[in-house]
Length: 77
Image (cartoon, rainbow, N blue to C red; front, side):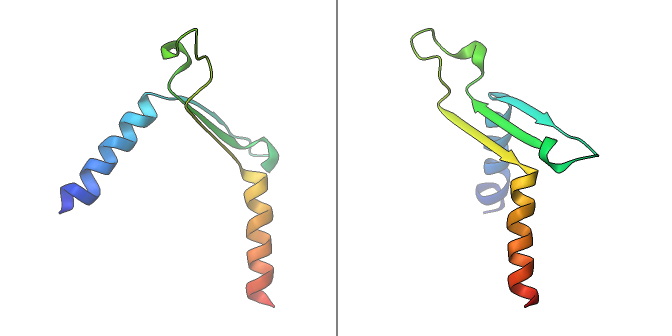
């Protein structure tokens, strides 16, 4: 069961990450500059007929901060 729920999903996640274009930008001075962008499959593996990625993920730390502030305000009040 350990393999089924821990090892195999971890291997799948690592394989997905290796097969993706990953761009990570980090700044100490401002949150809006911090983001993670992931596109699957890699641009070099895409065909000329279908240049768009199958899956695209973008996360911005500044947007997460606003959500966390809303949750904090709801919990504190």
